[in-house]
Image (cartoon, rainbow, N blue to C red; front, side, top):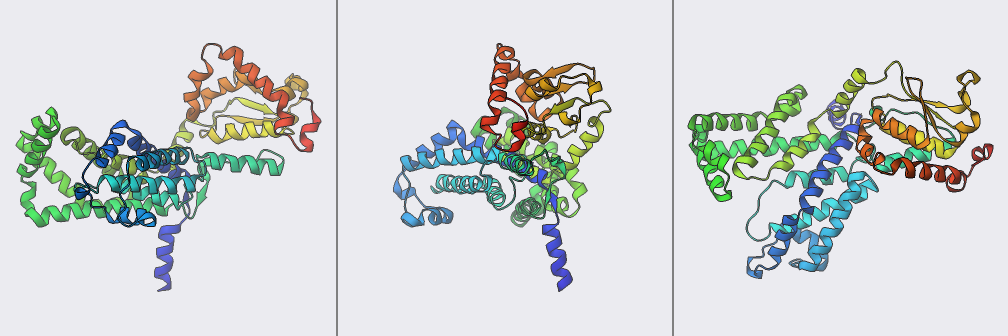
Amino acid sequence: MSKLFDAWRKYWFTPAPLLDLAVARITIVGFQLWWIARPPYHGALLARTELSDALYDPLPILHALVAPVGWSYRPGAEVLEVVLILTVAAGALGLIGLFTNAALLVFALGCAFLQSFLYSFGDFHHPEAVLILALGLLALSPSGGALSVDDLRRRFRRAREAGRFLDFDLKRAESAFAGWPLKVTGWVFVLIYASGAYFKLRNAGIDWANGYTLSYRMMEDALRWDIPLGAWLSAHHVLMVGLSWMSLVFEATFALAMLVPITRWVFVPLGASFHLGIYFTMGATFQGYVAAYSVFVPWRAGLERLARRFGRPERRPVVLYDAACPLCVRSVTFLRYWDWLERLKLKPLQEVGQEEDLDPDALRREMHVVFPDGSVERGFFGFRRLLRELPPLWWLRPIFHLPGASSLGPRIYASMARRRRRILCDGEGCAVHDS
């Protein structure tokens, strides 16, 4: 019995990459946030408030959520507006990873409240269930342990307490609690697909795959939603037979994706194509499943492969920073956080030899970057050029090249550098150089 318990615990709580969990958080929260922030979603909520009370039949989860104000309470338009605004705000915080767990908990509850209200008038579906469940699991996990403002702030604080830059590799960060939310979500997919295959076979037997059932359903939805592609495809019987069998086998064997991880290279692309296909042919809104498939992807392994191929070149830009200045340490910590391919070399100016022909006073005033071609960029211009080496920050490059950036950027940098003692430097380290 003890061995069985140990095996069970090992399955769920073996240390797993925080990076994988963080990417799942960003993907799932990002999709759900976009989904509820769309004007059609807002319009659907308001439309339900105009329906008769006779049609209102709250789902059990909505009963539970409104119980503090009344078991059968029906929220009005004003309440829904407030809940939607708070939910979107919480989702935005969860996306960037600020107060991550609290934000995700509020976001999950808000999404559950809004979606259960939409489905409390006699017509309900299940595409949103996986995402909302996943949000709840993420809220109970260390999903802000990487790729988050919370994690970056923790690293800033540790460096400040240590009084120096503490090197790290974001890809290597792990937690015993990082794997279980991904596995639980994966097994939820298994149950959903297995039940789908079971009910198909129970209701129609093997005849479900004769092509006529899928053809009828596709034609019906295509005509309802005016989707020409679905109407055209439904007329090709041989294709419908093939797709019917593919769907049935996919659902019945999806458990292999959890039991034999290498099969995910087949199941995940096939499943994503399957759900996107039924959206473009039948209008079924299962795009959220594609976002939730992020729980199956070994993101860290892929990033490590990229780092081996494109990272750690022999000649790298060398970032020279003042190890005695907390602001400088904070800056290089930020750079290291996004240097996933390890394309930068960070070097304290205290280790710069006289033979390198660099002005010590200038080094203290602003960051210097020595590039492989021998050129040296300072301050704002050094950071701007470094963005080329940091793929996660490429989206900033157009901003740093806007008209006027070359004039305004150095002024902002110089202003921060002059004030750094007053803003951030409260230890003896800042006293060793002037502003």
